[in-house]
Length: 383
Ligand code: SOE
Image (cartoon, rainbow, N blue to C red; front, side):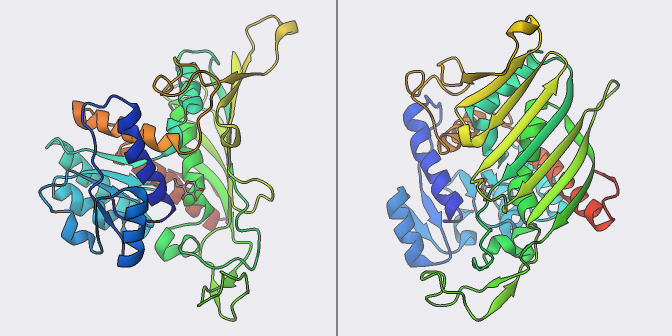
């Protein structure tokens, strides 16, 4: 695994736990953790359970005793590492968004296609597809329970940037992160909307804005004490993204959707929400209540209608069978175990796990279209 930050911790726990709960035909072993700072990487490896550490990914990815490369670095290194790892014959799991630009994502998707011909697989880490309630929402849509989809409302709202004196981080630097709220969390909303509905967006009209344009640079001791640094850095990404979109369909009504991605939604900690309205019913999911799915059945007599909350913890719900008795709740981290399970199943059977790099490229094109639209006074941009 390359990278040892927030996602490094989350993925490590997935690698460790998945083979202990799911019956995997091929079991992963946690071999090498790669990070730039030797001491910090060693400490992380000891804590999370990696057998070895290294500081240069180039020396690691060609090793004969390794089969999988997991990329959890900032977006600016995804393309280089993924393409090199696939060329070395390693299966690749890469964090989202796939890359920082469409051009990079295209090269990655092409590398993945080439590798697939040799049985080498690549997958993108849109983990929220693997929350049981979102996977169940997809099943209900596929089973026709909400009928023809007419509208989708999706938003990913956090508030961790609301303190204007909060420090600069790589997530606020376009050269490292690619974009701001749009790519970091809006990408999840896009992927989830497309996953649940089974449709793809084909045009968007949006606006991006940066609310706090300069932030203290982290100096020695600064940030730990909460003291604002003298020196300030420029925020080069969007703080908030709002856009309208249309799904592409082959005939019939092309549903319209609204999206919002922000890290300034005061009071919202991790509210990835999606509401799908259809001719026979509706669904509502909120990641802050991730064991629940609201379902409205418009086919029952009107006196009985109303949103009801389904506790998605039954053994027959997606991914739930090996976990706890009904009602004993899963959390944020379980999505990462489910991701490892699906990836390892793909490796064991040779079937392409989803989302593929081609799916990741499509999301990258949507992100790019939103940026183009915003730069053109919110004119519609084709994906
Ligand atoms: C990782 O998947 C990620 O998108 C992070 O990069 C976001 O900051 C987060 O809060 C949601 O998950």
